[in-house]
Length: 288
View 1 (cartoon, one colour):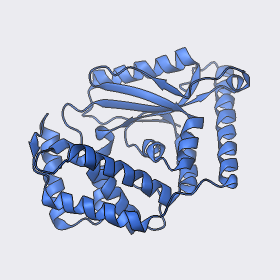
View 2 (view 1 turned 135 degrees about the horizontal axis):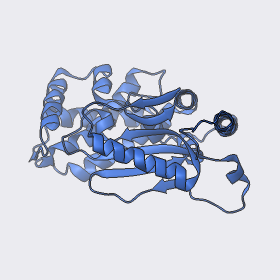
View 3 (view 1 turned 180 degrees about the vertical axis):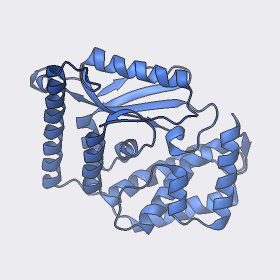
């Protein structure tokens, strides 16, 4: 089953541009494209009227490309143009980063905005990610991300670009969610859902609701002092995370073997489906 979920408020011309670029990726690079999603604020649920379009995709090289002696890049990138940003990872790169504790691919798999995709690929990859993701490593990813954002954008807290608040607030909320869900390693990507499920203090909920409302309506929120409720929440969650989550351990040999098997299965299934579509005289949406 093919996947596509585009909110009605997204610019039709921008979406058409994304679709055209994805067709170009398949045509020029000769790869399978089993998942292409929107990342960034539009997928996180706190977009502004002028928010960028951040397309991210996972691609898989054909079986024949795996037996060539020449090394190939594991990313496909395009230069940033106005408010449009697009790049993708080879499935091999996505798996390697996942096993190291990088949570980015998990967010891609959970994005509510899907330009195109294959249902079984997303479902199987997400199931694999849930088993492979190590809570401590994922938490450390968000802790380092949040601390960096706070350090770079907040300064002494007296004059903070209001839209930047979400850059540290989202990692802090994710850390809280992970603490409150000790059996889980994959938190919601959608920020309003994340906040609702992490039982935030009432003062923070009110502040966030106001920020979300204003951000949805205006192109520029301006700068102001960092709200005390936000500062306290972020600092407390970062401090708790430092002791609640241990150091990231390396992936086990067994998990690496499972990743290899998953990779082979994906390549073989995509090849088989493309060949089946060709025999039926069909045009596959995932093959060149």
